[in-house]
Length: 339
Ligand code: ASP
Image 1 (cartoon, rainbow, N blue to C red):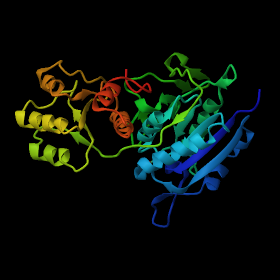
Image 2: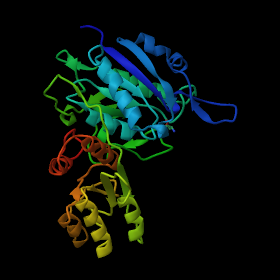
Image 3: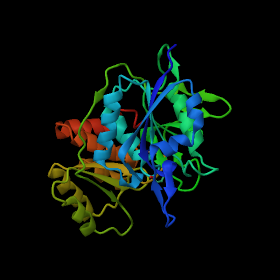
Image 4: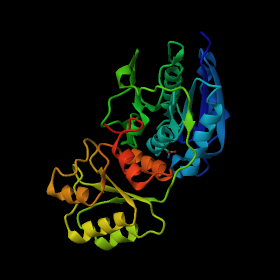
């Protein structure tokens, strides 16, 4: 068997950061990062690497950055068997979600990883995260990559990327996948849960090239005023809104709020309902407080994370779909992002 070819794409993030003279962490060079892992040279794989011209703290990620990563993967797709993206953890779940929609029919692994402590520190979690991610990206079955989706690997666990959420700014296991099981767990042995993998029936990658960021998120809170909601719904050129609701998709029944949402939908703006709860799903109609939302045409986002919902909305709004088609696609799983 030929050695698998893996491309490491370095984008920045804590993993490669060093402190400047004021003690502030800033991204440093790819060479510096790779020098800290001499073990990479012993890997039974051909490993190549590319660093972005502008390394970022992932808080600076935006749609152009996602499209750039998407292009790097598409341009190198035929040359490599798998991709490992080194990325800051803060917005890693958003980037993983965006790539999952942009890269249709993926038949190779795209694994995002990073760390809570820079690679240059003795206690870093970065070294293990990179090594395990490469090992997972190298796995094959019947001559084909075993993993064929966008994942996040962090502290012993491989997750479906568009199911994750960064829940801890301190723990090494910074991510959770509250509504979908693990894809693999790494201990003394690597346990693979193939039954949880996305099944892909095609080898021909479609790399989508557009995202629409004319979107907004409204997080409901007790006492929210109609004028606050209106200020958002009346943003010029707005095309889609996520409302983060309570529990199983509930919102205040105040007619002024409901009418504001109804007027927004009448203007052709899609509203998607995502729960503020970490576990569970939106079920519009379960309570009176969500029945009105359903009746005016708000779309249920099921158990999607806000990260996945945002990326999906940006992806679908950039397409030439009718309102009806968009609504339909938002309600079903297209990349394993909802149950
Ligand atoms: N602020 C950093 C980033 O997201 C945090 C990290 O890498 O964990 O780029």
